[in-house]
Image 1: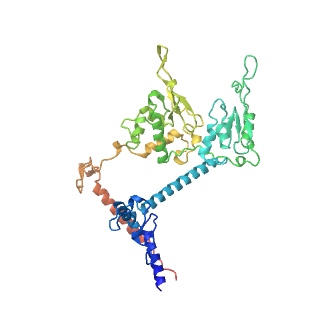
Image 2: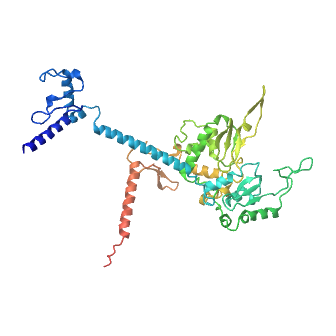
Image 3: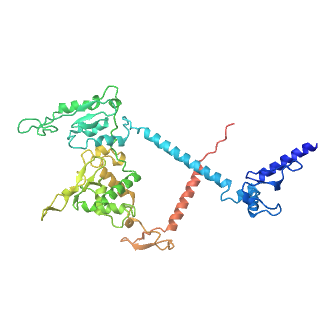
Amino acid sequence: MAVALSTSKRKFDKLLDNLTNDSPRSSRPNSAGSLSRNSIVPTDDSTVPTDDSTPTPTTNSTTEANTTPAAKRLRSSPQSIREIARSRLEAKKQAAAAEAEARALALASSIPARRQPNYIPWSQEAFLGRLRTFADVKLWTPKPDAVDEVEWAKRGWVCEGINRVACKGGCERRVVVRLRPKRRDAEGKEIEGSEDYSVEVEPELVERYRGLVVEGHEEDCRWRRAGCKADIYHLPLAKRSYWQQGLLERYKSLEGIKEQLPARVRTPEGAQSLDGLVERLPVGFFGEAEPSRTATEFALYGWRGEMFGSTALASCPHCFSRIGLWMYKREETQGTKTHGYDLPALNLVESHRYHCPWRNASSQASPGELKGLAGWQVLQKVIMNSRRPPSEIPQLLDEPQTPRPVSVGVDSVTPDGTISRIESPIRPTTADVVAADRARLSKLARLKRMMSFKTKPKK
């Protein structure tokens, strides 16, 4: 029993030494066979005490540091375990987010851009994209209405060469539209890309190409079965949001080049005056107290401003016609000599292409009351009906509210001796209008109750 207790005590003392002492030490057994705490032999001879009761300062500091509890040392450290764990977790999250973003970018770059489908006959944007390919006068010359660029674009064709159309993305068929022979030079050789406009176009040839607009596609091409509708060129100018946004965008684009706009412009007969149209617009529509008159007039007829290098142009985003504004300046400078020319005024309607909905009522294809009107006429009519000018609005609320007399009139004697009463016109007050509205609503409520029949529910 004594041996077992001695062994257990020796293990307990050893455990205490391991917990309180970090540095290796040597010990010797005592008479009881256990390790003594005062018999520690340090590795450095300078720290050996001369007496067990008077230890050196070095031994005291080392013993105090080694006997400090681990939890106390942890609490006195700059950062706690929770702060360290939180910082490591945030670092891992940031690294994971950066890695996920890099993978997403790599995946997006590897996926090719989705190409717009070829057959979308209901899309006006796609139609205008095809029509834009015919805008270059070097590639496409004017054609009769039956085979003009609008008819080819409605059936899915695009211009890819000199008077050559193609069904890109569809059946890939090509058709060369040649209505006139080429012009010849002095040596009798044909000039490439030219047409002899002195030769009349044969009607039979026009009918042949009119058939090729449809039959030029392959048998299984969807553009051969159906094309765009007749109103694909229609501009929804009757919608308030559409015409207001478009008018403001066009004005903002023209405001940057207002110094280059010609002062003399021509509008068609029957057009509304500029002051009358501006008066009907919402207050502060352009965001300026005095908007540019010329820029406003250009915007009202469908034009927008753009810069081609250092040259100011007016362009139409629907027929893709462009006007060089330098041709309509009042003065031209040639060297040191200044010449004043009386240049013709710019016609804001006829400068559009003949098939443009701003000019052509058939292309605009407006329904109802607006039928037969071109785009500029529709816009002006909508503006004139959108808002009454302040001069025409009766100022009822600004007038003093006086009680209405029971009977107002003047007695007059007719030539036959009878007395007649002439009532004088009196404008009703706000209180009279409100009272009349309440009476009208009350009558309608009574009529509704009279006309309503209660039926018994079916069992």
